[in-house]
Image 1 (cartoon, rainbow, N blue to C red):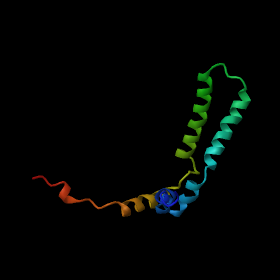
Image 2 (cartoon, one colour):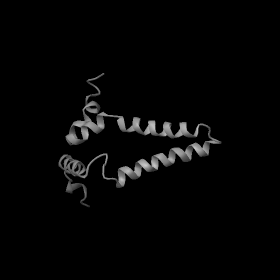
Image 3 (cartoon, rainbow, N blue to C red):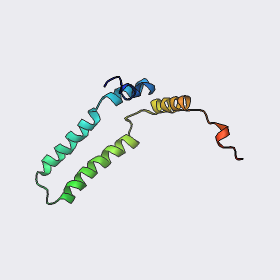
Length: 102
């Protein structure tokens, strides 16, 4: 089973090393879930489903803005540029014969 899944298990290896720790870890998701639980515990009783959805949506929106615009990004600009470079290196070269018309 492991041999059959080798490509999936080692898929991260093509990424820059700076990304490996982020791919291996699910700490950001656990941290986000703890923050949602903490805020829900403060409220304790919600009047309806919509209010729960608004609270969770607000937490997710805050997290998105922090990652999007904050000083501390989930993946740095430098490592993202390395990823872009890696993707361009490993991409299959374009085949001009596919675009020729008869």
